[in-house]
Image 1 (tube, rainbow, N blue to C red):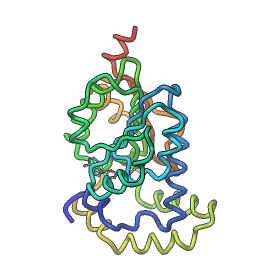
Image 2 (image 1 turned 90 degrees about the vertical axis):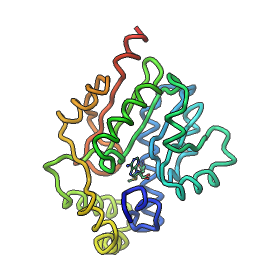
Image 3 (image 1 turned 60 degrees about the horizontal axis):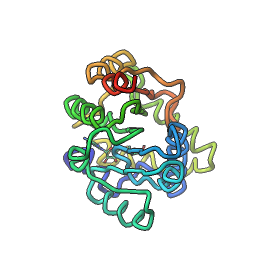
Length: 237
Ligand SMILES: C[S@@+](CC[C@H](N)C(=O)[O-])C[C@H]1O[C@@H](n2cnc3c(N)ncnc32)[C@H](O)[C@@H]1O
């Protein structure tokens, strides 16, 4: 296994149980829906993973584009959402060829940590191109340099205790610690950004950004940023 895309395409143990996986995607969908500006919005979920609650997100907008680099995950998304006329499944390559100024909201949650700095820069430039005037990018679950893995464990255990899957979460943590995840985490690593670093990165890519009060998902020690593209903002007046 060479990179995080391979990892997410494998039968990994990031979700401790079916219940954890379902709850995770329910919470993410609820938070994404909170950012949808109107019922006629076009929404892009960038590296969406299994997106098990995407039908709920699609109900709250006109069209939902699910983009995912892992081919196996993408195949399951295509099969799962084929009957839903509001959902389209795309690769990241497809996004590079898509028409500009076509999207109202881009959500990229829990993805930036797996990208190299140049990969994230290139993705931000493409997202700036894809956004309609006045559109927004929401970048969630950003890891901070000063917050270590222990907080991730505490956040997961709290989420598990609240929702009744503490036993599964403990077993899941042990499986993950013994799995490819640990090797990849030391070999490839995870990217971390301070609040100032991420604002600077978004500014360099042409966005005006600020940190949201709450992170998307269950981990309060990670950060979410909300950004508008400066060019599209000017055009919007
Ligand atoms: C933790 S999952 C997040 C999935 C979903 N957005 C969520 O919030 O549950 C990480 C996602 O990032 C994708 N990913 C991993 N490495 C990537 C890379 N270098 N570029 C783009 N996406 C990547 C994986 O395929 C996976 O879908």
